[in-house]
Image 1 (cartoon, helix red, strand yellow):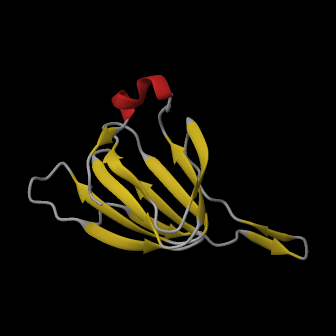
Image 2: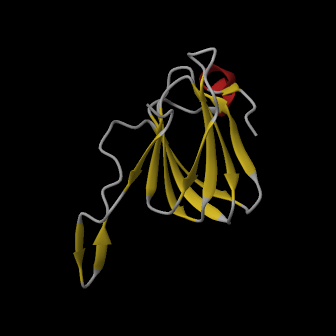
Length: 127
């Protein structure tokens, strides 16, 4: 089973006004809009208890992940395109290398207060 699950989100409704795409139907505690410049790297961490969902609005990036629950786990790499929803469970280290300027939604099941950063996000270098 892959570390990260990727789902291609397609419109649930479409007419002359435009489209409606249902991205996620799960309880979420935190939503952030993140922009990233071509060539930048984000992540290089894992979340001990939180699920993370990333929906790529525009751009493209390479996602590298590793399952920290298994000592012999290997890095996995996938390319993420606009309209993809990446689901990353707890204890999966993940990093992103942006091939293009990108905009994404980052949704998590836990709170992301800056003052408690080390409690919900742990450094783990992949890239």
